[in-house]
Image (tube, rainbow, N blue to C red):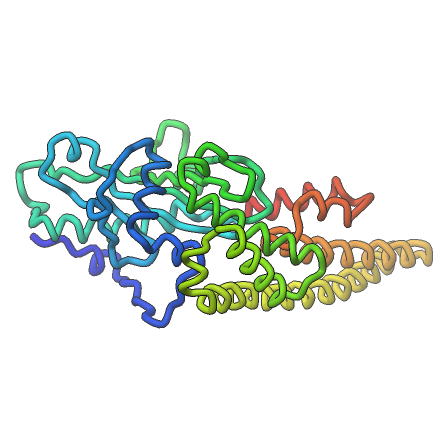
Length: 332
């Protein structure tokens, strides 16, 4: 019986051949750099890049099996992903990826599910490299089981997927950065762009200035010399997508103001007094404006344009209210 999870789940992700790699994946497409990253994370010392085989699945990487007993014992299937916004659903995403990875592995090895011998599987590792601004911890873990509806304390879920989130912003996870110079260079390059934006530069200028600086100081210099225009276009495309999202947030601000006014009028009518109506309108307007402002600030934080501390300063006396609202937003 040949394993075919595609028919079981009734879906197959279509490969988008026009998809452009994000910068992180573009940088680590070289097997030597990718192996260095793998060694830095796992504390290993593999020297031969050919021991690493890149799977055709988007964002999926795994170590090739070899006829070496010690390596087979430690054989692992590694899924690496990059995220610039916080996403609590990464374990579910990982589950879908691993299901297809194991399907391919079992079929390629000629194993049969109907056999009487247990099929040996490579050990799964799932790492998410995060460089957004709304999360400050060095490392955290997300599990699929956290998303399951409660079924009682005595019941254990049949499925689990664990994602380790690593903060790769400049200044974080120093030990990891020191072990993988390429990762450190990537973090510094992104930070240069953010610093330029904070100075009031337009996006094109911020990117160009960051590229000039990195070329002059040997940061990603080999990659930038070979593909400077490609890197530039890649970054502009990514940030333009963020600009589109910002436009939608501004629309939500206007909607929030309108909704606040309506709520204020309704509350005023229910009170039946002029004072109640005026107070209702005032509170409604303030609440609508606050909600819209919170949405915009949250978007800027998630897109890495400003830090959480800067967002808190902008809301001033509503800082505590903003923090509570933002925490609820992340849990959704």
